[in-house]
Length: 334
Image (cartoon, rainbow, N blue to C red; front, side, top):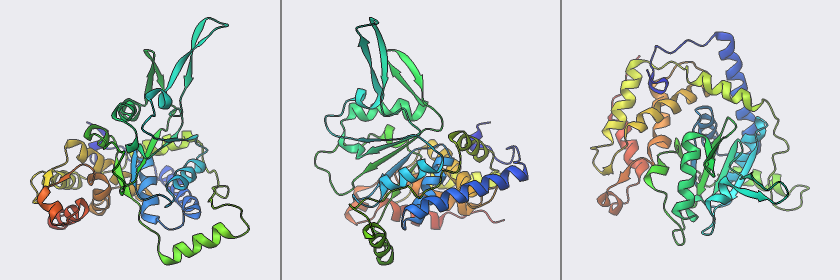
């Protein structure tokens, strides 16, 4: 049985390990929220995606704290952080690395690229051409890089957080469907509230030079190996058969729902359960509820469906269509 879709057959988590894991996750969330003002739902979704072992596509205009969020997450578990600014002239070797010939030893050595890290921020990923974008496919799926025919494993945990600006289309290359499907979730970051923006202003301008927000105050709580253990615990979160069936019904409904031209594939079901399991742990539970499935549905499915031209003319977004679908599909009752 595939662990991503296993139901109540999953091995129960010992109570002491569950309590310890919940405590670590809650402290990580508090540390990240201390650095990132507002955006609490975004913080929770990105943290849950990390615990699920997935990758995140973050959509939002510049200046909303995307880089800060990634750096804060990396700081909580002493993870290595790399950032790549994607541009039209970026080549795959600039991301993955390349072989260099050493004249002294008369041999080739591998110079590893920025992808060799725990958290990789691919900034404005849709500005790079398709060849460079596709070079990330193997890394995101297999967690390995092939350079000159030799495979190099990436250190676990490994997570790609890619950003794209929804307002600019000129000079961009839309992500292919195959790569979009590699992202477990797609997160949308909106503008902060008035109170949050005032708090941000006071924090940045008080006794500081420049306009940057730092993560020096974020405490390092665990090692990367602990994140791997947490991911293994998430895989053991119990999912009742009725809840699994609910996830399948939601995904299958996207394939013939009015206003949706292309629905989510079977990988959407797996992603939905993976994300719901992680969200259950962040909520302090060792079992998934229908509400976890509902909470995971938007970030998991919004990039896996295509809105019909008629819906676009009517001004309907993928989120609005999915919210209507979630409202109509009956959830199991305990």
